[in-house]
Each structure stands twice: as C-alpha cells, then as structure tokens.
Length: 356
Image (tube, rainbow, N blue to C red; front, side):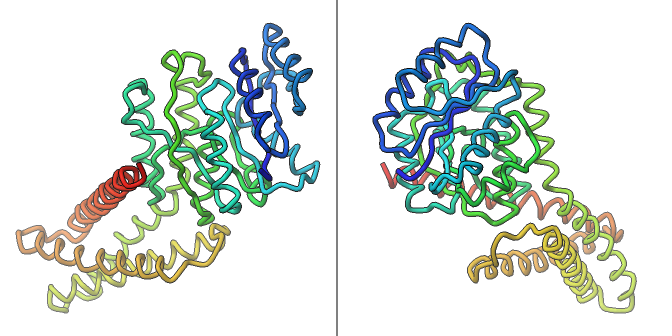
C-alpha cells in the first residue's frame, strides 16, 4: 500500500501496541506515531513500539491537541518528500480495526485524489447516546450549511491525499476542530469525498476519549458557521433586492410583478455569491455538466415555488413585500433542506442494504 499510517496518540495504553503490531504486518509504506505530550506513565508504550517495530515516533514536549499532532505528521511526510499517495489517519484507542484500515487503504489506492472517510453506523446499538445525538446534530447542521451529506462527520479514520496535505496543514484549529475544518475545506474546493462503511466500536462508552464536550464542540461549530457567511449575506441581498424590484415594477400586474421581482432578485444574489466564492478561490475544479443541471433546476424551482407562495400570501391579504418575502425564504430554505436530507438519507439506507 503506497500510503502512510498516521496515528496521533495521547495518554495511550497497550491498545496502541496491539494496533501497531497488527498494522506492521500489512504492506504500508510507513507508520508514523505522534506522541502528543503524553505523561511519563505512557513512556514504556512508545519505547516498546520503537524497539519492536520499524515506526517513526515524533514527540511533542507538551500536549498540543489532536489537530496539531495530525499537522505534525503530515508535515513529516511533506518535508521528507515521501513517495506516497497520502496518509491514513488512525485513532490510537482501538476503535479502528486493521480490517477497516485496510479497506480504506484499498479504496484510497483507487481514488487517491479523494478524501476517503470511514463512516460508522450510528444506528448500531453499542453507540453511546451522547455520541449518537452529537453526530446527528452535526450531520444535519453540516448538511444545511454546505449542502453536502456526510453520514459521519466526526470519524478519525480518513485517507488524506498528498496534494491536499499542504492546504490542510494551513487550516486553523489544533484540536478536534481540524477534522471538521478538513471537511469544510473539501466542500469549499469541490473536493471528492467518499464514505466507506466501517465497524462501529465504542470501548467502555468511549471513556478514554479526550474530547471536551463544551470546549471542543464550541470550536467545531464555530468553524462550521464560518462557512455560512456568504450564503447568509446573499440571502439578505435576495430579500432586499426583491423589495426594490417590487417597488420598481409597481405598475405591473401583481402576478407578473412578483415573478419578475423574484427572478431578478435571486439572479443578482446568485451572481454575487458565485463572484465572492470565485475571488476567494473556493472552487477546486470546474462545475460538472450534471452539477450545472442540478443547480439550474434548484434555481428555477426556487423562482417558481417562491413566486407561487408569495402570490398565495398576497391573495390571502399579506400585502407587505418584505414580510412575505422573508416568510417564503424561510419556507423554501427549510423545505429544500428537508427534501434533500430525507432523499440522501434514504439513499444512504438503500446503499447500505444493497451492499450487505
């Protein structure tokens, strides 16, 4: 396998030795372990691994966070100019089996410019409630903001392409939020993200996790909402431009007046959105023909459905252009996101059943 295994480790126990022992029998280019400032009680773990296995161990003098450890490992690969397609990040607590790691590696060999993530099944009975609820909330918010459906946004088992490492190393975040930032960056750059089903393992209700529910959740959601600045700005612009055009075409018949105002306002907001994203280099590759058709369908659907809803509100007596537009935009946003979420959730369920 032409990829590096990268393991960020903090306060690890014998499970890390067992993991490395099994991985060392597999044909990976190299195993890199970043000891992220573990205490002296863990020294024998890393010494044992160093003595028995041909691994590279990088030591942080103090705990700097999982994200920082991942950056350290990726920097090592880049600085040493390793002739690999990328790295596979693996948690040190035994939640990722060698079988699943090998499965990710095999998919990565085929799609070596894609971000490959190992997705757990949160309907599994051994998933702690807090993990199940947390992932569900994050998944929904991520879908609403990015329009991308990813069933497991918090998985640590990922294959990262070599050509994305430099960009990922420059991202903000030194703790768990870096993993979310990688997904956000992939969405910004239209990078292909592929999910591979993996075994769902939680040991002792995940008590060994160093995830801080308050601090780390805050950092993760802060990064997610950074993504929605432009769409929010353009939504406000859409509403304001509708009101402006509604006033300009005051002498036009109401049905046509609403349609023209909706069409012009949405067109302007979409052009501004595209321009901002393009100037910020948020496009990794050109939009495909299929994606263009999909976006065009969504655009005209928004115009037509918005036109019908606003006219219905006007017919029912709601004459205020601003208020009716705001209500319709909320309805459209919730409606489109719900339809997409349900549709993609159904697809994911079908895909799992089909591949059993």
